[in-house]
Image (cartoon, rainbow, N blue to C red):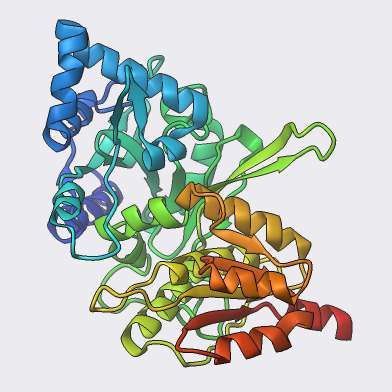
Length: 424
């Protein structure tokens, strides 16, 4: 085998070795993949049986020897109907029996049952996965959650004369067919093109129209002024942050639960959906929200922070993610840190986007309240301990008075775009 082939294979092996040794994954078997269903059916069924034994027992009493096929078919039908992300977050039901496809990490450490359920999740890192019914093409690495493929990666090594541009071309023209594993919203939720120095991502494969976004840290590291690309990593690959900081077990599950969302545009007259995009956070967005949460958890309320966010880099989503995470943040004593999160903005687009985004996470109406009438409406929202309150700068004197009175703690996020627009 030529030396450059050995180096590219080593890149795959090193990624797999990290995830299976330190990242919380098991080594996957590509032969276990059901190409027609786009599932590792054995792992999926094993997860259901071991994590939800009483429900499985009830299910078997109904379907008998046909239980396995019925469960898999029901899961696939529900995903086709509402999308994989919604099924992951809300589960799926058959004959009145509700199953969970994944268990999320509990906000507090109090509930032992929730902790055990979270530990029951099975994550696999599978190399060279043959996925098609019509050919023997393979994907370099696929990450599975309880038998469900959720992440794909094409790896390239500059020593072979190839880089992320070649991986992107591969995704556009060799990976954009009708194979079930690539069906938008229904199986793999994010695709990464990776080489030794750069990372790009997309959430929808559309042939030549497929659009990849950079998933780099910046030349001087996340949060530091610099150029494009990534800093040199003296201890390994420049792109190792992808599997060390983003795709490891806890972080990937956190992203699937609390960041990833389906953004829909609708016709104002008919209400029909005109476009859909699956939003996976860019690295700088993950970085800023993670750093803020960590500092608040360590130091509590009362500090001020300034976040610089360039135009077109997803500020509205960053605000939505930060507000949602702060509204549920607990300290080391499992006590909630903030009564409410108040967002001050003049942007109408943020109102609907924030409400739609947060609803996908919580599935509870009333978590987000828009204050658009008077100060009394604001007071009522605060007294009702509404999770996230959106208001305008004109009402800030009332906000200031309310948050200063009594023994209450609030997080206030001020979107300053309105000021730059008016002064610009």
